[in-house]
Image 1 (cartoon, rainbow, N blue to C red):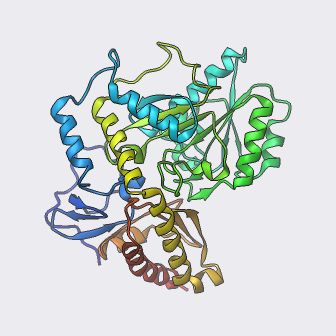
Image 2: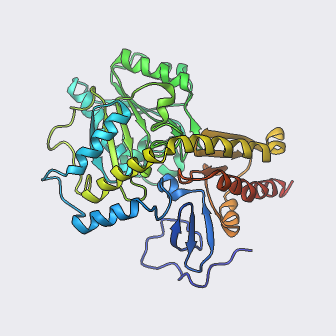
Image 3: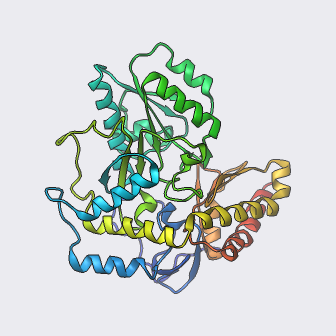
Length: 406
Protein backbone atom coordinates (compact mmCIF):
# COMPACT_ATOMS: atom_id res chain seq x y z
CA UNK A 1 0.00 0.00 0.00
CA UNK A 2 1.41 3.36 -1.02
CA UNK A 3 2.11 6.01 1.58
CA UNK A 4 3.49 9.50 1.20
CA UNK A 5 7.17 9.87 1.98
CA UNK A 6 7.82 11.41 5.41
CA UNK A 7 10.48 13.69 3.97
CA UNK A 8 8.08 15.29 1.49
CA UNK A 9 6.20 18.24 2.88
CA UNK A 10 2.41 18.38 2.36
CA UNK A 11 1.21 20.19 -0.73
CA UNK A 12 1.73 23.91 -0.35
CA UNK A 13 -1.47 25.94 0.02
CA UNK A 14 0.27 28.63 -2.01
CA UNK A 15 0.82 26.54 -5.16
CA UNK A 16 -2.17 26.34 -7.49
CA UNK A 17 -3.78 22.92 -7.48
CA UNK A 18 -3.26 22.17 -11.17
CA UNK A 19 -1.51 18.79 -11.00
CA UNK A 20 -2.44 15.43 -9.55
CA UNK A 21 0.99 14.82 -8.09
CA UNK A 22 2.42 11.58 -6.77
CA UNK A 23 3.90 11.69 -3.25
CA UNK A 24 7.41 11.85 -4.72
CA UNK A 25 9.96 14.67 -4.78
CA UNK A 26 12.97 13.98 -6.97
CA UNK A 27 16.38 15.03 -5.75
CA UNK A 28 18.90 14.10 -8.43
CA UNK A 29 19.54 11.78 -11.33
CA UNK A 30 22.20 9.91 -13.23
CA UNK A 31 21.65 8.50 -16.69
CA UNK A 32 18.21 6.88 -16.81
CA UNK A 33 17.84 6.77 -13.03
CA UNK A 34 16.58 9.33 -10.54
CA UNK A 35 16.48 9.42 -6.75
CA UNK A 36 13.89 11.01 -4.48
CA UNK A 37 14.63 13.04 -1.37
CA UNK A 38 14.49 9.85 0.72
CA UNK A 39 17.11 8.10 -1.39
CA UNK A 40 14.73 5.75 -3.25
CA UNK A 41 15.91 5.00 -6.80
CA UNK A 42 13.65 4.89 -9.86
CA UNK A 43 14.21 3.84 -13.46
CA UNK A 44 12.96 6.79 -15.48
CA UNK A 45 10.79 5.56 -18.36
CA UNK A 46 9.02 8.93 -18.60
CA UNK A 47 11.98 11.25 -19.18
CA UNK A 48 10.14 14.31 -17.88
CA UNK A 49 7.47 13.50 -20.51
CA UNK A 50 9.84 13.04 -23.46
CA UNK A 51 12.06 15.94 -22.37
CA UNK A 52 15.24 14.47 -20.88
CA UNK A 53 16.74 13.30 -24.16
CA UNK A 54 20.20 12.72 -22.69
CA UNK A 55 18.98 11.45 -19.35
CA UNK A 56 20.19 13.09 -16.16
CA UNK A 57 23.54 14.68 -15.28
CA UNK A 58 25.04 13.95 -18.69
CA UNK A 59 28.85 14.26 -18.45
CA UNK A 60 29.13 16.44 -21.56
CA UNK A 61 25.90 18.45 -21.36
CA UNK A 62 26.30 19.62 -17.76
CA UNK A 63 29.77 21.22 -18.20
CA UNK A 64 28.58 22.95 -21.36
CA UNK A 65 25.60 24.46 -19.54
CA UNK A 66 27.80 25.45 -16.61
CA UNK A 67 30.13 27.18 -19.04
CA UNK A 68 27.22 29.06 -20.62
CA UNK A 69 25.79 30.10 -17.24
CA UNK A 70 29.17 31.55 -16.30
CA UNK A 71 29.08 33.72 -19.43
CA UNK A 72 25.52 34.90 -20.12
CA UNK A 73 22.14 33.29 -19.41
CA UNK A 74 19.73 35.71 -21.04
CA UNK A 75 19.92 38.29 -23.78
CA UNK A 76 16.78 39.76 -25.26
CA UNK A 77 16.14 39.64 -28.97
CA UNK A 78 17.05 43.29 -29.46
CA UNK A 79 20.49 41.81 -30.10
CA UNK A 80 21.92 38.92 -32.09
CA UNK A 81 22.35 35.67 -30.16
CA UNK A 82 25.14 33.69 -31.86
CA UNK A 83 23.93 30.27 -30.72
CA UNK A 84 20.53 31.00 -32.30
CA UNK A 85 22.26 31.03 -35.65
CA UNK A 86 24.14 27.80 -34.85
CA UNK A 87 21.03 25.94 -33.68
CA UNK A 88 18.84 27.30 -36.49
CA UNK A 89 21.38 26.22 -39.08
CA UNK A 90 21.49 22.73 -37.59
CA UNK A 91 17.70 22.36 -37.46
CA UNK A 92 17.46 23.51 -41.07
CA UNK A 93 20.09 20.94 -42.04
CA UNK A 94 18.32 18.10 -40.21
CA UNK A 95 14.82 18.98 -41.43
CA UNK A 96 15.41 20.07 -45.01
CA UNK A 97 13.49 23.27 -44.23
CA UNK A 98 14.71 26.87 -44.30
CA UNK A 99 14.13 29.13 -41.25
CA UNK A 100 13.52 28.89 -37.50
CA UNK A 101 11.74 30.98 -34.86
CA UNK A 102 12.70 30.26 -31.24
CA UNK A 103 10.42 30.32 -28.20
CA UNK A 104 10.40 28.51 -24.86
CA UNK A 105 7.71 25.79 -24.91
CA UNK A 106 5.72 23.52 -27.18
CA UNK A 107 2.59 25.50 -26.50
CA UNK A 108 4.29 28.69 -27.72
CA UNK A 109 5.58 26.88 -30.79
CA UNK A 110 2.10 25.65 -31.62
CA UNK A 111 0.61 29.12 -31.02
CA UNK A 112 3.14 30.51 -33.46
CA UNK A 113 2.18 27.86 -36.02
CA UNK A 114 -1.49 28.80 -35.73
CA UNK A 115 -0.62 32.47 -36.18
CA UNK A 116 1.48 31.61 -39.23
CA UNK A 117 -1.49 29.78 -40.76
CA UNK A 118 -3.88 32.67 -40.15
CA UNK A 119 -1.44 35.24 -41.53
CA UNK A 120 -0.85 33.01 -44.52
CA UNK A 121 -4.58 33.04 -45.17
CA UNK A 122 -5.00 36.78 -44.67
CA UNK A 123 -2.08 37.44 -47.01
CA UNK A 124 -4.05 35.49 -49.65
CA UNK A 125 -7.17 37.57 -49.02
CA UNK A 126 -9.03 35.04 -46.84
CA UNK A 127 -10.86 36.96 -44.11
CA UNK A 128 -11.75 33.97 -41.90
CA UNK A 129 -9.02 31.34 -42.31
CA UNK A 130 -9.80 27.80 -41.17
CA UNK A 131 -7.41 25.05 -40.09
CA UNK A 132 -8.00 21.30 -40.22
CA UNK A 133 -7.21 19.57 -36.90
CA UNK A 134 -7.74 16.05 -35.57
CA UNK A 135 -9.71 14.03 -33.09
CA UNK A 136 -7.70 13.11 -29.95
CA UNK A 137 -5.04 15.71 -30.78
CA UNK A 138 -3.23 17.67 -28.08
CA UNK A 139 -1.47 20.93 -28.91
CA UNK A 140 -1.43 22.79 -25.58
CA UNK A 141 -3.57 24.53 -22.98
CA UNK A 142 -3.68 28.14 -24.12
CA UNK A 143 -7.04 29.23 -25.50
CA UNK A 144 -6.00 28.80 -29.13
CA UNK A 145 -4.07 25.53 -28.74
CA UNK A 146 -6.82 24.26 -26.45
CA UNK A 147 -9.30 24.91 -29.24
CA UNK A 148 -7.12 22.98 -31.69
CA UNK A 149 -6.86 20.12 -29.21
CA UNK A 150 -9.31 17.23 -29.64
CA UNK A 151 -10.13 16.51 -25.99
CA UNK A 152 -13.48 17.78 -24.65
CA UNK A 153 -12.38 17.12 -21.05
CA UNK A 154 -9.50 19.56 -21.40
CA UNK A 155 -11.68 22.14 -23.13
CA UNK A 156 -14.53 21.99 -20.60
CA UNK A 157 -14.93 25.18 -18.60
CA UNK A 158 -12.94 27.36 -20.97
CA UNK A 159 -15.54 28.07 -23.61
CA UNK A 160 -16.07 29.90 -25.88
CA UNK A 161 -13.32 28.22 -27.85
CA UNK A 162 -11.45 29.93 -30.65
CA UNK A 163 -13.24 29.47 -33.96
CA UNK A 164 -11.73 28.48 -37.26
CA UNK A 165 -11.00 24.77 -36.72
CA UNK A 166 -12.41 21.82 -38.68
CA UNK A 167 -11.93 18.49 -36.88
CA UNK A 168 -11.50 15.13 -38.64
CA UNK A 169 -10.49 11.58 -37.57
CA UNK A 170 -6.91 10.46 -38.07
CA UNK A 171 -5.84 8.22 -40.95
CA UNK A 172 -9.10 8.68 -42.87
CA UNK A 173 -8.37 10.60 -46.05
CA UNK A 174 -11.95 10.36 -47.28
CA UNK A 175 -13.24 12.03 -44.12
CA UNK A 176 -10.77 14.85 -44.61
CA UNK A 177 -11.82 15.29 -48.24
CA UNK A 178 -15.51 15.33 -47.28
CA UNK A 179 -15.00 17.81 -44.44
CA UNK A 180 -13.05 20.23 -46.63
CA UNK A 181 -14.96 19.95 -49.91
CA UNK A 182 -15.76 23.28 -51.56
CA UNK A 183 -14.35 25.27 -48.64
CA UNK A 184 -12.12 28.10 -49.89
CA UNK A 185 -11.24 29.28 -46.37
CA UNK A 186 -8.98 26.36 -45.43
CA UNK A 187 -5.36 27.41 -45.11
CA UNK A 188 -3.61 24.58 -43.24
CA UNK A 189 -3.71 21.07 -41.80
CA UNK A 190 -2.27 20.79 -38.28
CA UNK A 191 -1.48 17.47 -36.61
CA UNK A 192 0.98 15.37 -34.60
CA UNK A 193 2.88 12.74 -36.55
CA UNK A 194 2.30 10.52 -33.51
CA UNK A 195 -0.33 11.77 -31.09
CA UNK A 196 1.14 11.85 -27.59
CA UNK A 197 -1.44 12.85 -24.99
CA UNK A 198 -4.16 11.35 -27.17
CA UNK A 199 -2.81 7.83 -26.59
CA UNK A 200 0.29 7.30 -28.77
CA UNK A 201 -1.64 7.19 -32.05
CA UNK A 202 0.64 7.24 -35.13
CA UNK A 203 -0.40 8.75 -38.44
CA UNK A 204 -0.02 6.11 -41.15
CA UNK A 205 2.81 6.79 -43.58
CA UNK A 206 0.58 6.45 -46.67
CA UNK A 207 -1.85 8.92 -45.10
CA UNK A 208 0.96 11.43 -44.52
CA UNK A 209 2.13 11.13 -48.10
CA UNK A 210 -1.37 11.58 -49.51
CA UNK A 211 -1.95 14.54 -47.20
CA UNK A 212 1.26 16.15 -48.45
CA UNK A 213 -0.07 15.86 -52.00
CA UNK A 214 -3.42 17.40 -51.05
CA UNK A 215 -1.73 20.31 -49.30
CA UNK A 216 0.34 20.98 -52.40
CA UNK A 217 -2.68 20.76 -54.68
CA UNK A 218 -4.83 23.07 -52.57
CA UNK A 219 -2.12 25.48 -51.41
CA UNK A 220 -2.51 24.58 -47.72
CA UNK A 221 0.26 24.67 -45.16
CA UNK A 222 1.16 21.23 -43.84
CA UNK A 223 1.93 21.88 -40.16
CA UNK A 224 3.29 18.90 -38.19
CA UNK A 225 3.48 19.17 -34.40
CA UNK A 226 6.69 17.28 -33.52
CA UNK A 227 6.83 18.64 -29.96
CA UNK A 228 6.66 15.17 -28.37
CA UNK A 229 7.49 12.78 -31.19
CA UNK A 230 10.42 14.73 -32.65
CA UNK A 231 14.11 15.08 -31.78
CA UNK A 232 15.12 11.51 -32.50
CA UNK A 233 12.48 9.80 -30.39
CA UNK A 234 11.29 7.44 -33.14
CA UNK A 235 14.71 6.69 -34.60
CA UNK A 236 14.68 9.56 -37.10
CA UNK A 237 15.17 13.20 -36.23
CA UNK A 238 11.48 13.86 -36.83
CA UNK A 239 8.71 11.27 -36.93
CA UNK A 240 7.27 12.47 -40.25
CA UNK A 241 10.59 11.62 -41.95
CA UNK A 242 9.58 7.95 -41.96
CA UNK A 243 7.09 8.98 -44.67
CA UNK A 244 9.83 10.82 -46.62
CA UNK A 245 7.90 14.07 -46.67
CA UNK A 246 8.78 17.62 -45.61
CA UNK A 247 6.21 19.83 -43.86
CA UNK A 248 5.81 23.57 -44.31
CA UNK A 249 5.72 24.29 -40.56
CA UNK A 250 7.11 22.15 -37.72
CA UNK A 251 6.81 23.09 -34.02
CA UNK A 252 9.42 21.54 -31.72
CA UNK A 253 10.14 21.65 -27.98
CA UNK A 254 10.47 19.00 -25.20
CA UNK A 255 13.58 16.99 -26.12
CA UNK A 256 15.32 19.82 -27.97
CA UNK A 257 17.02 21.15 -24.83
CA UNK A 258 17.34 17.99 -22.70
CA UNK A 259 15.47 19.67 -19.85
CA UNK A 260 16.26 23.33 -20.46
CA UNK A 261 13.03 24.99 -21.70
CA UNK A 262 13.26 25.63 -25.42
CA UNK A 263 10.79 25.66 -28.29
CA UNK A 264 11.14 26.25 -31.99
CA UNK A 265 9.07 26.65 -35.13
CA UNK A 266 10.88 25.39 -38.21
CA UNK A 267 9.44 26.67 -41.47
CA UNK A 268 9.92 25.72 -45.10
CA UNK A 269 9.97 28.18 -48.00
CA UNK A 270 6.17 28.44 -48.16
CA UNK A 271 5.97 29.74 -44.58
CA UNK A 272 9.43 31.08 -43.79
CA UNK A 273 8.72 34.70 -44.71
CA UNK A 274 5.14 35.09 -43.47
CA UNK A 275 6.13 36.77 -40.19
CA UNK A 276 7.61 40.26 -40.38
CA UNK A 277 9.18 42.26 -37.53
CA UNK A 278 6.45 42.96 -34.98
CA UNK A 279 4.20 40.04 -36.02
CA UNK A 280 5.49 37.69 -33.34
CA UNK A 281 8.08 37.51 -30.58
CA UNK A 282 9.18 36.00 -27.28
CA UNK A 283 11.08 37.57 -24.38
CA UNK A 284 12.78 34.33 -23.32
CA UNK A 285 12.75 32.67 -26.74
CA UNK A 286 16.20 31.99 -28.13
CA UNK A 287 18.05 32.98 -24.97
CA UNK A 288 21.74 32.00 -24.83
CA UNK A 289 21.32 29.23 -22.24
CA UNK A 290 18.46 27.53 -24.10
CA UNK A 291 20.28 27.81 -27.41
CA UNK A 292 23.45 26.30 -25.96
CA UNK A 293 21.35 23.45 -24.56
CA UNK A 294 19.87 22.78 -28.00
CA UNK A 295 23.22 22.92 -29.77
CA UNK A 296 24.87 20.59 -27.26
CA UNK A 297 21.93 18.18 -27.21
CA UNK A 298 22.09 17.67 -30.97
CA UNK A 299 25.89 17.44 -30.93
CA UNK A 300 25.85 14.69 -28.30
CA UNK A 301 22.98 12.87 -30.04
CA UNK A 302 25.05 12.76 -33.22
CA UNK A 303 28.30 11.78 -31.47
CA UNK A 304 26.61 8.95 -29.57
CA UNK A 305 24.37 7.82 -32.45
CA UNK A 306 21.26 8.12 -30.29
CA UNK A 307 18.84 7.89 -33.21
CA UNK A 308 20.06 4.35 -33.85
CA UNK A 309 19.85 3.61 -30.14
CA UNK A 310 16.25 4.84 -30.00
CA UNK A 311 15.34 2.63 -32.96
CA UNK A 312 17.18 -0.47 -31.73
CA UNK A 313 16.31 -0.32 -28.04
CA UNK A 314 12.77 0.82 -28.86
CA UNK A 315 12.25 -2.20 -31.13
CA UNK A 316 13.57 -4.50 -28.41
CA UNK A 317 11.33 -2.90 -25.81
CA UNK A 318 8.25 -3.18 -28.01
CA UNK A 319 8.97 -6.82 -28.88
CA UNK A 320 9.58 -7.69 -25.23
CA UNK A 321 6.32 -6.02 -24.19
CA UNK A 322 4.43 -7.93 -26.87
CA UNK A 323 5.96 -11.20 -25.74
CA UNK A 324 5.32 -10.59 -22.05
CA UNK A 325 1.74 -9.51 -22.71
CA UNK A 326 0.96 -12.00 -25.48
CA UNK A 327 -1.85 -13.68 -23.55
CA UNK A 328 -3.49 -10.33 -22.79
CA UNK A 329 -3.12 -9.24 -26.42
CA UNK A 330 -4.68 -12.50 -27.60
CA UNK A 331 -7.88 -11.94 -25.61
CA UNK A 332 -8.03 -8.17 -26.12
CA UNK A 333 -7.49 -7.08 -22.52
CA UNK A 334 -4.44 -5.32 -23.96
CA UNK A 335 -5.78 -3.90 -27.20
CA UNK A 336 -2.53 -2.87 -28.83
CA UNK A 337 1.09 -1.90 -28.24
CA UNK A 338 1.86 0.90 -30.65
CA UNK A 339 4.32 3.63 -31.42
CA UNK A 340 7.86 3.67 -32.71
CA UNK A 341 11.34 3.88 -31.25
CA UNK A 342 11.24 5.11 -27.68
CA UNK A 343 7.70 6.47 -27.91
CA UNK A 344 5.44 3.55 -27.06
CA UNK A 345 1.89 3.15 -25.77
CA UNK A 346 0.29 0.06 -24.23
CA UNK A 347 -3.47 0.38 -24.79
CA UNK A 348 -5.52 -1.49 -22.18
CA UNK A 349 -9.21 -2.30 -22.44
CA UNK A 350 -9.83 -0.64 -19.06
CA UNK A 351 -8.66 2.50 -17.23
CA UNK A 352 -5.17 2.01 -15.83
CA UNK A 353 -4.26 5.19 -13.98
CA UNK A 354 -3.50 3.16 -10.84
CA UNK A 355 -0.42 1.75 -12.59
CA UNK A 356 1.45 5.05 -12.23
CA UNK A 357 1.68 4.78 -8.43
CA UNK A 358 2.07 1.01 -8.48
CA UNK A 359 5.03 1.26 -10.85
CA UNK A 360 6.59 4.05 -8.80
CA UNK A 361 6.31 1.89 -5.68
CA UNK A 362 8.46 -0.68 -7.51
CA UNK A 363 10.95 1.91 -8.74
CA UNK A 364 9.67 2.68 -12.24
CA UNK A 365 8.42 6.05 -13.53
CA UNK A 366 5.75 5.92 -16.25
CA UNK A 367 2.61 7.83 -17.15
CA UNK A 368 -0.90 6.96 -18.26
CA UNK A 369 -2.57 9.06 -20.92
CA UNK A 370 -6.03 8.91 -22.53
CA UNK A 371 -7.17 7.02 -19.39
CA UNK A 372 -6.12 3.59 -20.60
CA UNK A 373 -2.75 3.94 -22.35
CA UNK A 374 0.56 3.39 -20.55
CA UNK A 375 3.02 5.82 -22.10
CA UNK A 376 6.76 5.06 -22.24
CA UNK A 377 9.00 7.93 -23.40
CA UNK A 378 12.34 7.34 -21.64
CA UNK A 379 15.63 9.14 -22.32
CA UNK A 380 17.14 8.20 -25.67
CA UNK A 381 20.19 6.80 -23.86
CA UNK A 382 18.10 3.89 -22.52
CA UNK A 383 20.08 0.63 -22.68
CA UNK A 384 18.79 -2.79 -23.67
CA UNK A 385 19.23 -3.99 -20.10
CA UNK A 386 17.18 -1.05 -18.84
CA UNK A 387 14.50 -1.79 -21.44
CA UNK A 388 14.31 -5.34 -20.14
CA UNK A 389 14.00 -3.95 -16.61
CA UNK A 390 11.03 -1.82 -17.67
CA UNK A 391 9.29 -4.94 -18.98
CA UNK A 392 10.10 -6.98 -15.87
CA UNK A 393 8.57 -4.37 -13.56
CA UNK A 394 5.66 -3.16 -15.67
CA UNK A 395 4.15 -6.24 -17.30
CA UNK A 396 3.28 -8.13 -14.09
CA UNK A 397 1.52 -4.98 -12.86
CA UNK A 398 -0.51 -4.78 -16.07
CA UNK A 399 -1.46 -8.45 -15.83
CA UNK A 400 -2.52 -8.07 -12.19
CA UNK A 401 -4.59 -4.99 -12.98
CA UNK A 402 -6.38 -6.80 -15.79
CA UNK A 403 -7.25 -9.70 -13.51
CA UNK A 404 -8.83 -7.42 -10.90
CA UNK A 405 -12.63 -7.69 -10.85
CA UNK A 406 -12.67 -10.32 -13.59
